[in-house]
Amino acid sequence: MRAVVTITVSLMAFSVLLLSGREFVRTHGSNIEIIYKDLTSVDEIRTTELDCDAVKPVVYRSVVSLEGLGTEERKEAFVKIVLPSILIAVNEIKRERRELLRIEDKLSKGIALKDGELSLLSGLSEKYRTDNIKELLSRLNTHPPSIILAQAALESGWGSSRFFEEGNNIFGTWTFGNSPGIKAVKSEARLSRYDSTLEAVEDYLFNINVGWAYKDFREKRTDTSRSLQLIKYLDNYSILREEYVRRLNNIIRSTDLEIYDTCRIDPAFIH
Image 1: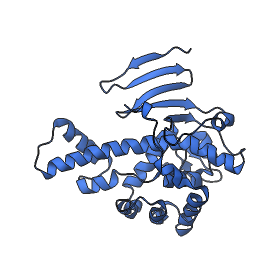
Image 2: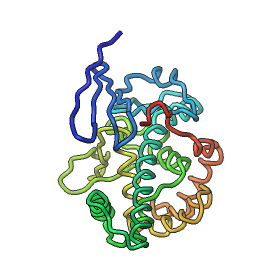
Image 3: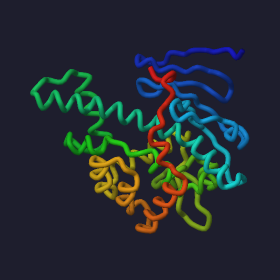
């Protein structure tokens, strides 16, 4: 049996459980314990089981290319790698949104906010770049995993792109400024490098939630959670525009990605 060492880091009960040289568990946000791992071989992910009703919150700090797998195997392996990070990130946004809704309710009733609530509201307003609570609620929101998986699949070639393998870049996100990133071939363009699959998903969701190009998408998702309706408003994500939406539609339909919209993190890891 491997030794387990617990290290208390902050008043928020942030902890690290060292399981081995390449795996550890860490509390995320306020209620999820995440298993951080390095993916060292394709066989490792092929033999991993995925239970939609109890998805283990495994986040990969490094991945391997899935290019060598057959089409169906590659798709299955890709979902196993990315879905847990999607569910973790979505869970965190939903948790913060519930707290924001409680704050909105208190404000509507003229009830004074506590210091912690004021601090949370201030932090969220700064992060999501708006002082308007209605707009903040529109930005602090999520959309179905099937859409996120479809975009991830399209942008990374189902985990076969160089940027996926070298920098956990799942969504083809570019980087600017002083960040070195990963240089594209025959171009000066650079793509973002992430420390984990979760960091990539969080950055993608943040960009969707604050970017001017996705305002219509954010407004529409307050009315519906139907993937095939929502993707029509993601045409600004790519220069392909309508063709990009058509490809997302095809991926969601042909791969039956909507079955993952009801998946949830294993309750044993939520506290």
